[in-house]
Length: 205
Image (cartoon, rainbow, N blue to C red; front, side, top):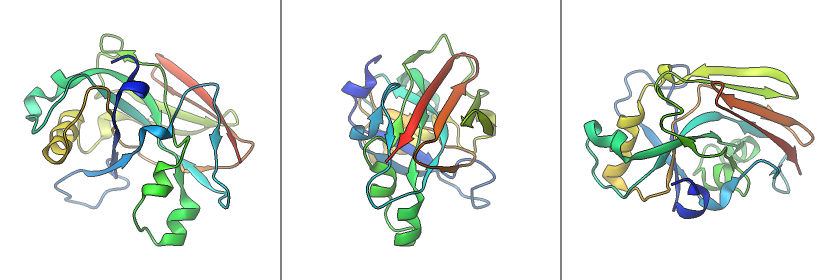
């Protein structure tokens, strides 16, 4: 679904999916949701809600779900992917510090907290399990990672999430990030996926 930001029902996101973040021996993915009202596209600004100052970036590969599925077997999971997108999972770390890691709904679900790229066709990204992601703040490279280091691969995430919630056509699955860092009002984020997609967003109050 090319217009996934309009047709999907939810953003399903993986947390702690890289070795630098995860507890050793964890047997299942950590999953949370972001509302579709958190989407923005290039030309729109990441807006920090009133009363908060510190928002952190996480740059991630997103998988667009192409058809409805429940209890999807791992070996069939990629058949449910219609394409991909580059996504940012923005987080209010002020909020997380304040609430002592209580539910993440506001910290990760505020309006403009999910900037996304255009839809990427499957034949444009032939190896999603070996994809370079990078991010700059004010033109300084601050983060680089590769999806080959994910603890739980795309089929694992799709299969696991679909045990608990029906995945609908147009839903976006964010596969996690290997790290994060702060941005503030006035900063500019530039990020990319291989040489396929690049996007840029300004941060504002």
